[in-house]
Image: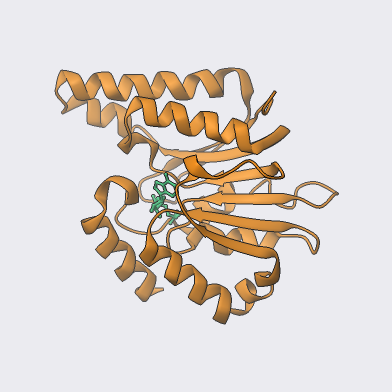
Length: 213
Ligand SMILES: C[S@@+](CC[C@H](N)C(=O)[O-])C[C@H]1O[C@@H](n2cnc3c(N)ncnc32)[C@H](O)[C@@H]1O
């Protein structure tokens, strides 16, 4: 665990924009994000986006059913190496390793093969440009099967707090992100969890997307 925290902190300093947090997510946030994994009777295809050192992955692998398939897509090579080690050596991870692929690429360039039933995202959306957030949301819709569930989180009140100390360009960017997320949340949100025992506390949103046409 200490090793994962050290790696995360190093990557936060080197790749602040994409890492987006100083430490891996806590257990309660991971559990809320993984809520819809294993929640249906049939086999699921599950995608985790931005797994980092695998804090949320730990909760996903516990819930995977015997016929579920699991892909992880991660941009950062150091995190990919750490995840590969975990799938090779830790019992809960290696139990599902034969049905798992760790993909070293950007979410946005992932080809739409067989659509996913559940997507769990750990992306730090508040760090991105509005156009990037819009593209990420479109990518989720492209990769999900119609009626599939996307789960993602936002830290409580962080956008509002940042806005108070930002210049007008930054405030515009934060407002644009809120608008882009609202366009998805407003029509499609099916459940919302408030995870207070997390630093900082977080909202976990679960949305059922209509999927690609
Ligand atoms: C806030 S960290 C979350 C890590 C982990 N899920 C957790 O909760 O501890 C964000 C992760 O997303 C990855 N990431 C950022 N942009 C990405 C992209 N476009 N495609 C894939 N992964 C990305 C980062 O490298 C990092 O591992």
